[in-house]
Image (cartoon, rainbow, N blue to C red; front, side, top):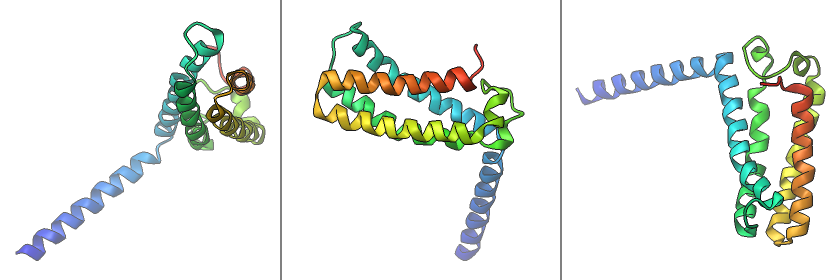
Length: 151
């Protein structure tokens, strides 16, 4: 009897994993994933921008923490931009799908910039942190201007 229960459990687990894998392949889920990553990026960039603009006190420890998060999140963004999502309603312009190599290159450059920001933030040099943040944000804006629909 016990072996029968184990077999049922394993079969149920296989069905669950199979259903999840099938659902994960749906283009809409890739769009939702990338939107989630972009929202997480904005969640972390916002407080950094307020520090850089002087809207709140500059906290180099918090800034470094947020910069580390960006360095982890940026590489995740590209995963959700799969060709099968081109027809799904989103903020992506048609040009993104026509120029995927450029888009990928821009994300890869942003990966480097976010890693550099995290590195600079660890030094505690506020002036360098501000400049490096500005450079990274310019990359974000350039990509958004080129490939994101205005909403």
